[in-house]
Image 1 (tube, rainbow, N blue to C red):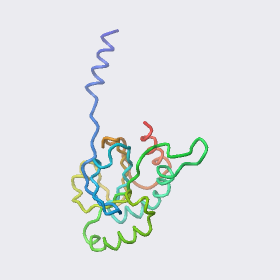
Image 2: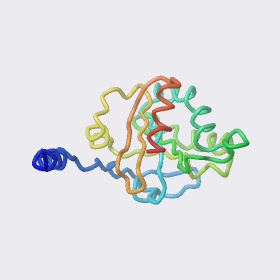
Image 3: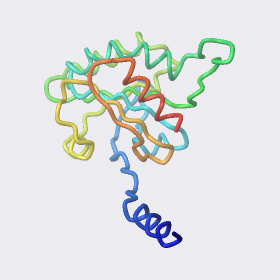
Length: 177
């Protein structure tokens, strides 16, 4: 019996796989600050809402309010008051090709539309994203991708696509584990 437990423990240890670290991504936020993800986001769990195209940005519109309500707003009062997840939410948009020409105007518009206290949460990058998409197994850039990071940058959970309550519950559930 004791040998069975030792064998089971050994099998569990051998099957343990170290967490996958989110690859370094250099961004600029709406405060015009350079942010290295995940290094500059350490110390707090983070949900990265990643948009790799304008099509993905259009899908993100359905995600924005539920994500804000769950991760940023002060809850519903009573026992649910405050942000029970104690997590950071960052929207990261990739800018490439002809979109780079329109970038200054997009930034100007975003700065007026987004409350100043959240300017640090909205970022863009014009980095080559091949390494990022490869390491995150992203094949469809036309939909948004959501990555939940542990405080040290390890990926806890990843999902993509259209908004559903189940996907949002999976994201918030990963923050509680």
